[in-house]
Image (cartoon, rainbow, N blue to C red):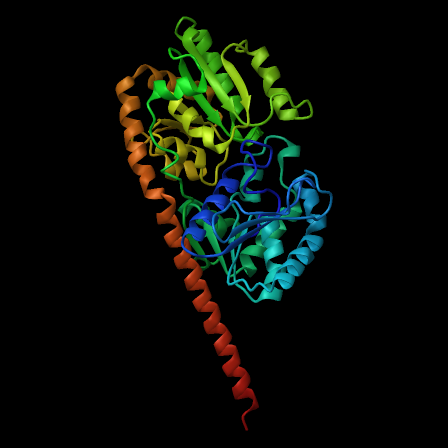
Length: 424
């Protein structure tokens, strides 16, 4: 597996860490449980960490590859260091005498690496984008939020040249066809999975005691990266509306934000949101807790009365799936993969993106109706069982085998053509 710009073992909620990290880590672990050896190559961002880490189960490794400065850098600057990354990965495999059957690349930067390595290893490339530059540009509100032309061109190239693409939802497959010209037969829809052993119902009061938070308050939870397209501003404005319309009701109300670093002075978006919190007069209602380890997230999900995903764009929406697996109801934007995952009125509630008034109404409705919360939470928990990692990994392994079979068939055909060409 290739995950150039972010390590699957990194703490979630940072600038470049989120659902993709979880996907790579959990899929790799499930593959190793089946006796499949997995190496995950990622760019080294800390010279003090070991370059090889054995934390993916027997036969699973994360390999931190020095390429450029061993420090966090902007994703788009990594592009200039990809040739060095490719060469170091190639040499590593050569020195260890490794032969890989499949290259599974994640995000567009990793896809470019995978294409270069395919020419060396003769292994098929399975690509998953996780997000699409074209879609991010469609919801960008500022120039600095737009993705660069290099990304869009790389994604178009990858769609043309990789052996197969995995899309998280039918909608993402349609976007790949419409916006990038993908051949429908070259794209298979396989959603991400969830660890239903980790993300499971825990009594609310128990979860709150573990976290040391007051037992009597209503809690709304946001989990995600602190960036504009995650829609946290919309949630904050919805909270301000509730505080104005229901001042008594919101006295025992709080929004917990997990993600980012509230003390990072260089994080412009975090600073903007904290300033907005002050301007809206809701400083006492919204708590920024920063990034949290994956092991503690089930307690936060279970402690919450509702989880909100007010995103402008989500290719899938893993946070919603994790919350649902815990039996916590979800309010989500009516966008992207959330349309597929959160069934309005059945497994959660959906509202149009960037509509704080409608989001405030949905919050008010759900927090006042215990029976509705219970019903949506239970329906969501049952729905989430379909996404258990063993089920999803079965589909991924089937795809690996299909692509390998097809590639070997082509190679045999080429060999036969070569033999025919020398016959008299």
